[in-house]
Image (cartoon, rainbow, N blue to C red; front, side, top):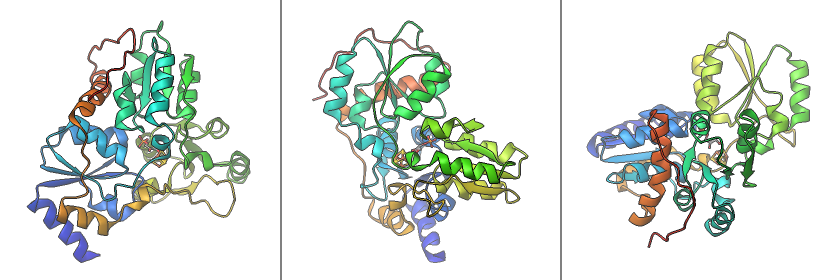
Length: 324
Ligand code: 13P
Ligand code: SF4
């Protein structure tokens, strides 16, 4: 492992490469990354990067977002099969038909979506900037939210704004079981419950803090409590343990009760070996047809503008134009 880390470091210098890693990656991958963060942070760092090569240790939609925002770079992923159930559950043709059915609405789309779906959306959100994005949408506009129904439902209630929701979900976050969570809370009454908004509402209603991976990490770092029950993917525990070695961190229980061990199978496809190989071969790369990339950039740019406190305009009507 020591040799592999040294070789990755050497290749990073030789190829002028940076590694961006999501919090759900294994600890060894997070430790060799130049930047570790949530999906919004990774998109921002990827957009700003001056490196020639950007290796995204996360899932493919995250690498696509970087490519859309910073197209002149070589964007690598350790494994092109690292998908996401939200992306898989929102196929383009079906999503477009739904979008066309509500053509007067503002299409607010979670970053966990394909480039094609981003290209027919008005604005992208992540779980860390959704508050800011929603506040920027005029109150008289109808909202279409997808593909994550649980994040959408949570935001709709929080802001008292009706939304049309796409029925997608994260296969990892829906596994948490509320009955078993209540049992765990009963034996740990001193624990602070925190949850990612991709969880079902039965879980979210018990959480004292609901937020993105970075918000949950911030809570563990700042809250003086000594015990936390955490309803999100296990990878985040790596940074949490570093920041709070004194605290007891318990993952919320999942359905079948065998363990508290909820991992994203896509994030976990990435390994140190695959990262090394990708840097050696400058492959696999994420590439998009230029027409599609430009169309998808519109909704990502709107997200970036709003988060930079810039004014944006909203189209009145959705009219589909094929990028080719
Ligand atoms: P974050 O934006 O909170 O990092 O979430 C991304 C994700 O895929 C959660 O499952
Ligand atoms: Fe997708 Fe869920 Fe994995 Fe996040 S945790 S990448 S939403 S499958």
